[in-house]
Length: 233
Image (tube, rainbow, N blue to C red):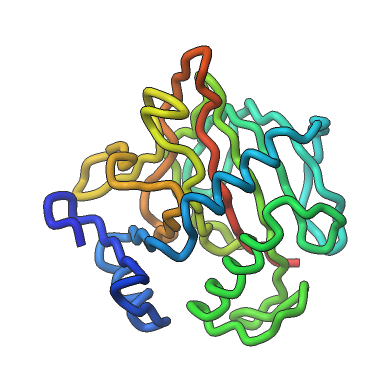
């Protein structure tokens, strides 16, 4: 734990993590960072390959469902839910595990396996049961370009579970302002100084969070993150 910031960081090279420890640390302040489950090298290598691909932006609205095609879109709109209205400015790339796209395949496979251990999910099927409901995995790449942001909000939703977020960019190298932010100790603040590429971030449903406006110069690419969520089907 970083005592100065009350942010929990578990380095898996030094401390083992299991389901009980995961829930205990996550419940402490609603935020947990898991380090060295992924290396900076493997994340950067996969991201560099992905950025070289030609991506066609298409708008795919509506619910996620089994066997849906991969899609990429630019989101700049208000999002309404039961708890808050929030805006966003980002590129979204959704890479379902059943489609023919090798982008981040090994990373998502490893992340799904880790999530399953933490959640007590024992099946490897694409449609699986959790808390008496059927779910699918939704692997996504989020890109915040210059002026990209995600307003602070709460994730609590009846159709999905919490997100697992792998940090794929470094503040100061890929962008110079803004970044991932959480409400901790009643203060909403950027936590990027505590993060490294490859870190896995997980938060409680009810913690306020978002991405403060990202600013880049001509040589910088913006902020990327690798996100795994799960949705009811």
